[in-house]
Length: 351
Image 1 (spheres, rainbow, N blue to C red):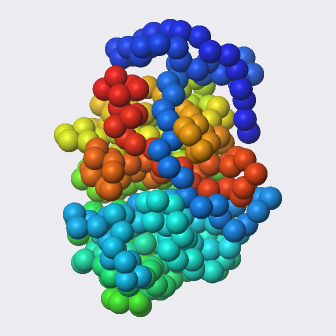
Image 2 (cartoon, one colour):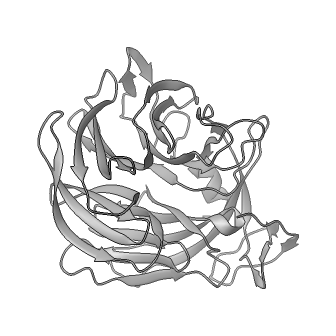
């Protein structure tokens, strides 16, 4: 779904001034809220599946010393799904380091463990969560599976609460399953801890480990906030309909910058991203603004984005943080992922 519109100058009414002209896009009778442009910094190689909606969701990883991957030192690595074929590992320069032909993987996320990380991906072929492990050197390897009763595993995110590694998988119909990940080595699995329903088609999600909070994007409704402790009594953080989020609501991610935590949500209906500053307490969120990713040099802009992920803090040349998002229209090439410097987003939003 794509819309294009005119540009106009204006001021935001949420206490944050944006200088210059902001993109103004119309979806039916609803105008998008003022939106600034941020230049793309880099892009990955295209996924192998051509002429299809294929690239979907990324995840980011590094350490203070970089990453030893396949015998070479990398400043950082990116995981990215081709939902028709499997899982890629890219370098920060966008080159393919590894491809796992794992089939119909939709969303991917990871959490640190030991010198490396555990990753998971919603698997629509085997109907559950495919698990992977990276031990800090070598390559990514399959590490187990969580079988689910969902009709179609769709959204996925990971977290760690009170020391327990969590995997949250969302069915396309909005059914949610939370699992505690257990096991060692390459024999990981999961035990269900809670189940509930969002209400309609949902996908993007992200977990704030520090506040034990789960954020879920319901595509035609908005972004919900769920506590991961106690009953899953939700709060609507932001709804579709006021121009900040234009359906479909897709990718959801969190980024910490100093003492601040930001929620970044893909507004697929008008090719943009909305940003909130969030806190531990529900209701304390503050809307910051919106941005689009524009072309820069040989790297085209981002349209119709699906998944998005963020890295908090330095990674390679991105001293303040990095955003990576799927790009639906990659010109003559198959879909891929774009990299955006978080410092550029903050500057554009006058943070």
